[in-house]
Structures are given as C-alpha cells and as structure tokens.
Amino acid sequence: MIEILKISGDELMAMIGQNKSLQFIDMSDQELGNGLPFETTAIAFPKIEANINQINKHGLVVLACKHGEKSFFASHLLQTKYGFSNLRSLAAGIESLVKLINES
Image (cartoon, rainbow, N blue to C red; front, side, top):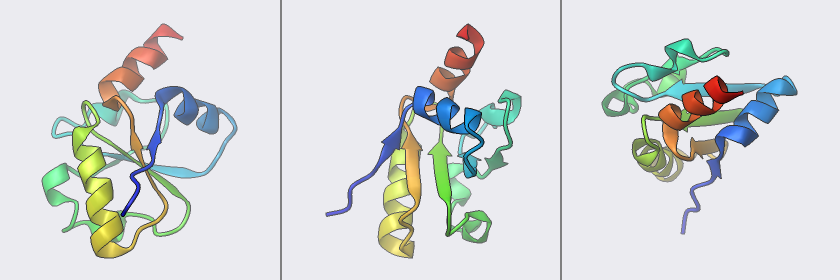
C-alpha cells in the first residue's frame, strides 16, 4: 500500500526558512500560489500527467491545491503510476498556507 506523505504549512515555511531546496507545485486552477513568498510551478491538476517532465524526480516536491484534496490524489497517481518517491501533499491546501503567512 502506498503511503501519501503530507506536510503542514508550518513545516513547509520552516524548511523554506532554512533554505531547504524544494519544488512547490501549485495545482489550483486559479494559480493561488502566485502571491507566495517563494518560487512556485503552476501545473493544474487535470494537466499533471501531460506536464510530468516539469516535476523534479530528485529533491523534495510539495504538491498543493486549494484545500488539499487534489494534491493528495495527484501524489498517489505520481507515486503509483510514475514511481515518484519524493512527494509531499500540502495539508489543508494553499488557502490555509496563505492565511498562515499573512498572520505571521
């Protein structure tokens, strides 16, 4: 059975604060990650397989969507079908992350 690993907004921001190398993929249809204080890659959920070459195979990759559901399913797909083992799904999604950032 595949385990889908999650990362909280606090954990993500701590890693970014420590200059940990990662790829953040904004899977929302509205590209909600545009205002985040770090680099994002926009790949909408329906286009994830068509853009598989844009996803790093090495190093941490954080998949994020509006609320966390699509990133969870995309992580499962990428692990089972394409063999990715470096993925984390952002728990609670981009909206929660933006709120966390705005409150700090």
